[in-house]
Image 1 (tube, protein in one colour):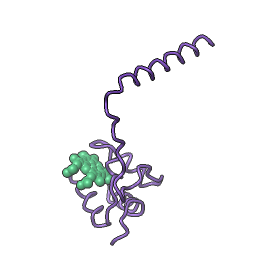
Image 2 (cartoon, rainbow, N blue to C red):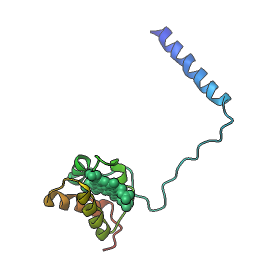
Image 3 (tube, rainbow, N blue to C red):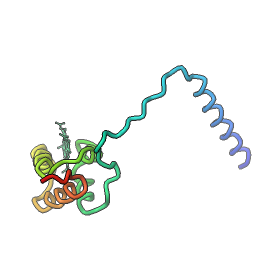
Image 4 (cartoon, helix red, strand yellow):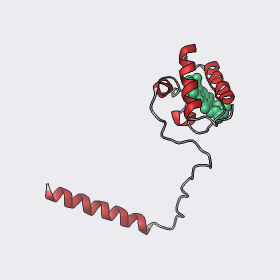
Length: 109
Ligand code: HEC
């Protein structure tokens, strides 16, 4: 057991060292969220459950939470997704709509 730990430590150290030696590449810029960008941690709720169920066939759910939108914009986006094939009943549409406008709304109406 002790030998295993030692071996993996050596391996980790040599990996780090190898990486440092190959350091002629410029560091990757860390993408910063745009000002006003929505949180990537969506708060829990029935709307989130529906989004996780119905909105990730065609794109990641992070696509849904990328931007804050006015109620009109959310309405248009959700309608567009339904036209594209998202399977939401009118009741589910309302729950998703309420969730998105509450947590990812611009506040403008
Ligand atoms: C049948 C496939 C499909 C399903 C299901 C789907 N989407 Fe999309 N969605 C797309 C496509 C394709 C795009 C890219 C559209 C574009 O960029 O023109 C997109 C883009 C988006 C965008 C970004 C739009 C923009 O203009 O910024 C949002 C937000 C979004 N979807 C939300 C949802 C939500 C919410 C659901 C669930 C109710 C959902 N999508 C389900 C296909 C789908």
